[in-house]
Image (cartoon, rainbow, N blue to C red; front, side):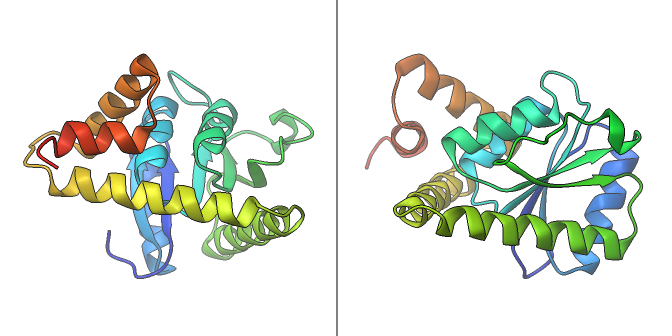
Length: 190
């Protein structure tokens, strides 16, 4: 992650498209984390304090809409839905939340900047529309920061995506909060 701006989770199964999006986001000074499919996007988004998602519509294991919904249930995160197809092929209306903007690939830098800004603005409006939402979002961001710190501080050669998936699967299996599973699994002595 090279930027200093918000952390953006890119979920794109095509390696060249993922690299191109990462390069564009870094030019825009965003920090970038990459997922290779929808399931990995859910796991990384649940375990790291991402502020925006950029999800491809068609991905293996879980499409971008379903991944955005699943992530939003665990940790409200605004998503820009990407499609290499005509925007008419996207579901209408786009589920809002979690999808606050859409973008056709390949996108130029200005379109990408505008879509991310629209998603952030739409999310801020969603938060402001109901009391208590801001507290929920702040709580999940704190929990994701705790989980990310635990993953980053664990002595492991495993990729972050794999560790995040394992933690999420364990939390689901044991019916425990993800943050508790991360603390117990990655730092059992505490």
